[in-house]
Image (cartoon, rainbow, N blue to C red; front, side, top):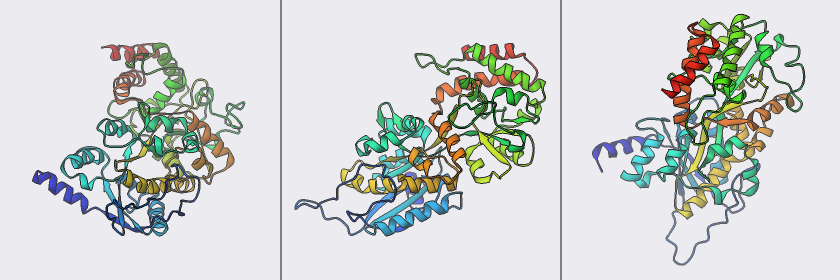
Length: 440
């Protein structure tokens, strides 16, 4: 092993935090619905290797989910790990916290440890869902299909199934996701729309945004030159596709024009201030302005809304042309790293504990992340109207498209958005700029 790799691994091991010892009685199980197929107790045989009195399970987490770091939801997660210790006193959980991306991040360190020190690899790891395909392609995580009960598989929202799959195999379970809401001040609308749009609740339409008596705030500047999620949702909600039948990036000129005309009408009525929205690059910035009283409608992260909204605010899906509640989700998946059947049988106990409906509901509500299962969302402590709205949003949510697609199409789309909002192009010209930028 190279000295640098050894020092890196030793440094990581110093970050380990133990939650206590954890037992494996055959009768013990987490409360709430189980996500994992029940595992039979391990029966020793005459040829079995001697097992230690306490087995250590390793859990690697991103720094955003550090149970001991003081972030939203961390106290709940730490308590759940402590409760697991009491339920299973013959197991010990070691938690290692790493940065999410880049050199020395979770994915990078999984690769390094597998080659340099496989004995320190975790049994379970929580990754950014965008890294799951890379982890699976490098054989760093194991399929979960044989561990899932049929009921648990059907309980997942469609986006969670897609987000956890690589090709046709389930490589991760969704622990929690973030998405975008339209936050609005309840005083603006007597009723969100003229007629019910989905089930028993209503949505805010493009027409209502255009005629709203207050500004519509969204991060038009985008991030890393890519289009903001608000515009991407408007495009998808108007029937646009980001890739053709062969998977190549594409932009539908007619759909892009419809979105630009919507923005044009908002600018004409003063609902959109180009100077304001072009100065915002992240949904969190729009939320901060909204909390300060700027604008009556804003595209904001669901995590911030659920942690910080007050009684003067409400939420709805981001407005689309036909009021279809399209949303883009990003989030965290938990995966099995251990390939040992005996260790998998034990690691499943911790995986099942964390994914149990009541545990996942409690943690996700405290952190603001949205759950990937209907059972967990059903246990959220919110009003029936809010829950109905959340169900509709998550039933229609989509994972972020592949990086190549969002990079190429997103950059081209952003060129058109900036060209229009900066006054350099008409809606027709802006739609053309987006298409031409992609084809160059």
